[in-house]
Structure formats: structure tokens, C-alpha cells
Length: 25
Image 1 (cartoon, helix red, strand yellow):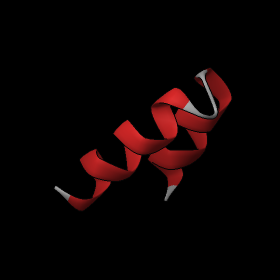
Image 2 (cartoon, one colour; image 1 turned 60 degrees about the vertical axis):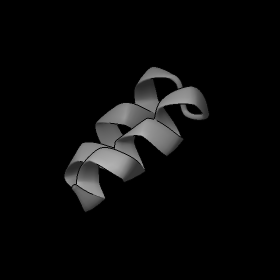
Image 3 (cartoon, one colour; image 1 turned 90 degrees about the horizontal axis):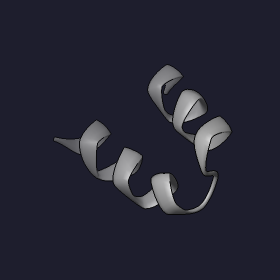
């Protein structure tokens, strides 16, 4: 979940989907 926070701060929307995918992986 920590990773998602960092991504959200970067793009918030574009990375949101990418971050979630990476987290699941």
C-alpha cells in the first residue's frame, strides 16, 4: 500500500492504474 501512495503523489491518475497492477503482481 505504501507504494501506491508514492505513485498517487506522482500522477495520481495515470500511475494509479499502473501502480495497482504492479502491486498485484
